[in-house]
Image 1 (cartoon, rainbow, N blue to C red):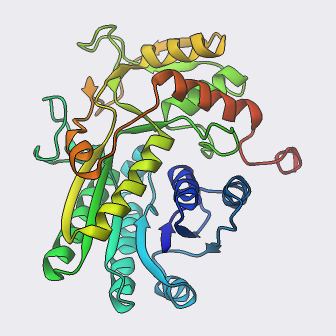
Image 2 (tube, rainbow, N blue to C red):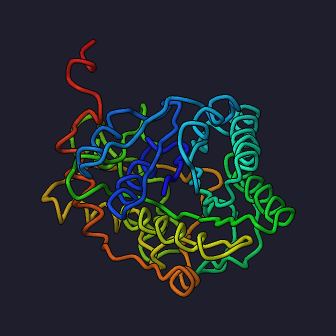
Length: 343
């Protein structure tokens, strides 16, 4: 069964492609490679022993999508593609709205034209805004604090409305919490461009000596150690959640939303000290002022995914830290080779 992964060469997409290929699906990757490397899909092909097609193209360009649907018998879609840096979205809101909403709209139009009626959407816990009640449940009120989050919120609404208009459409909305880690082989992992926006790759780059020290933003939150608490989920557990979502979409119609998280909150210092312990390293850090918009605590209630998707996380915080460091150690400059780095 051919599954189109838009943005499938990125961090979560590449791990999902590997998971699907191993499960007998036929992933087809479309990516404009603006924040991804073709090397990721080459490695997925090597790890799975299956040749994963990678088409360089853009979801906002209708002809690029039409070409993929004309060449491959796409039955299902997982929609990862989109700009994703929160800070950048605040500075460039129009670019984010134009790109991320156009990608969703164009994809749905092309899917409809080709009779493809199953889509899994890569959403985010950012749609819960500054909800103070924990754990976060799918039924909670929604709201966002930045344009990136609003593009996820609006895309969810577009997909809901499309599902209402077409009773044959199957839409699964997956709200991710904080994916970290890498495939256990160390062959694929998170490879951010420039200074990392996310905590784990920042820790890894400090540990490797690429960055001087970790900035911990705030130590005066009402948490057990004063630092922010988040729900960190191993990227392979997250990838397996997409496999469960595809299976659910095959058997159901309509629109359904699921949290993908562990249901356990760990603080910044919990993550940092676990990383140091399991990898036998010391990571220098300093306490910095809070960042605007950050909340004290955010973690999921994953009960609905366990009940309806028959999915739950298997990997521990130790696994996340160990696998992230294995990836960083084996690939000190990410997917870039030494020759490319020196050029």
